[in-house]
Image (cartoon, rainbow, N blue to C red):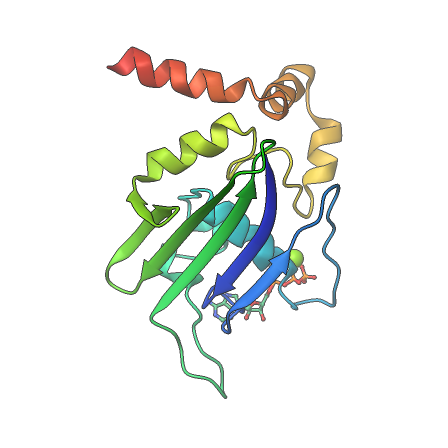
Length: 174
Ligand code: ATP
Ligand code: MG
């Protein structure tokens, strides 16, 4: 499974709708301080189900909505869409949207789904909000310095075994 496109609207500094095509292989984001590099990575993690406002550098989840500047009014919602491409060539679109006062909701190919459905989708794809494949500032050093046990956990995630653990826990609870 591969991420083909990231689409943002009203998310943090990305107030106007923008599409980013993501090519195969390793993707790096470069640009001057404050241009929105970290915001892009946060948008990916958020659409995959990140639920910690603090890890999104906010006090509450609504802080991801464009807050306005001296020249532009704030927005009432933020939306992030991830277009996925499977090995078989099928496309899946995951959308997360948050509205002020109304919380956030997910859609999978246009259907309303639960947060859990989205996290299972990404757990199986060895990606997800806490994927070792998303290397943020400072994380490279943490991976290198990790104790063997911690590094094994990272490798398990990268290998896609973590998805099985999530499903097993889910089954045990039923
Ligand atoms: P650095 O190189 O310093 O790490 P960066 O490219 O990672 O910078 P970000 O941290 O992604 O930059 O972006 C910071 C910018 O996003 C700041 O200008 C901040 O004001 C803006 N920003 C964050 N949240 C919002 C929001 N809710 N509404 C509007 N702007 C926001
Ligand atoms: Mg940054």
